[in-house]
Length: 99
Image (cartoon, rainbow, N blue to C red):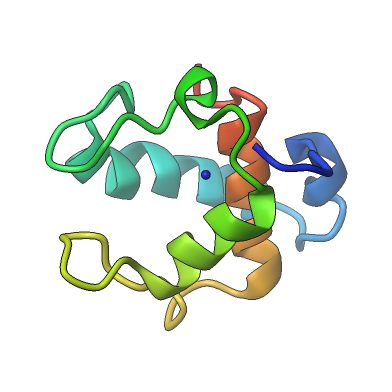
């Protein structure tokens, strides 16, 4: 939700098991896209493209991914994602990997 220390998807991919980055990319496009729009320009959820997220700390974005946003449709993904995976997704979004 751009990080003061932007970690790019390639750097974070090294922390993930082989093949997991591709799985997470599909998760972003399919699962996140189901609410944020297939091009992530917004839908039920807000626009989550890099240009919109610019200036958002990556740690904050990863926390939103893991814990959701109470009172909104944004669910917590902590039961399904590790901290490293949420950080990878945050970096992926902030670096425009989805564009």
